Length: 179
Image (cartoon, rainbow, N blue to C red):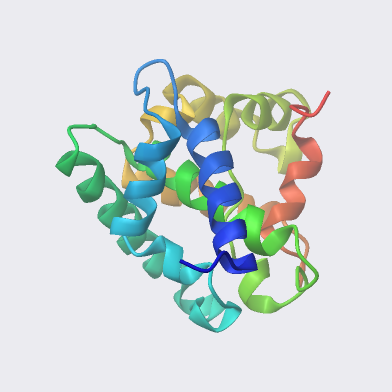
């Protein structure tokens, strides 16, 4: 196998996504996360921006990817929720596309941000968008336990606080995990 920049990005993104999505209630190895991403077809998305859906189709595609990730996880005896599947997908895509030079492309702006307790806590404490009660609702559920409907409702709320023509990734200005 030739070692290409695409393979290099894939390995890094799979590592980052697997480390971020593995939680106390659902521990898995980086190798398992990488296998799941590949089996679910997510690796193909990262190969080229042209493989990403249009912004209008992104949410439906994301639901399908989450279902594929959950199915692939079940095949190796792991029980993923939609919250865990979303985190795996979102960190993977963030590592490849958002942290790259095309971050203003509309396809990349549609990529969902990774959700975690640090982000939800900050959105709640700062009452971003005047949605304190909603943020608190998601904090209580816990990101790793989100169902499909809960996850999609949370993403809709994030869209409401995202400035027009800005990437959904901009909500991460409230993420304090880097400190």
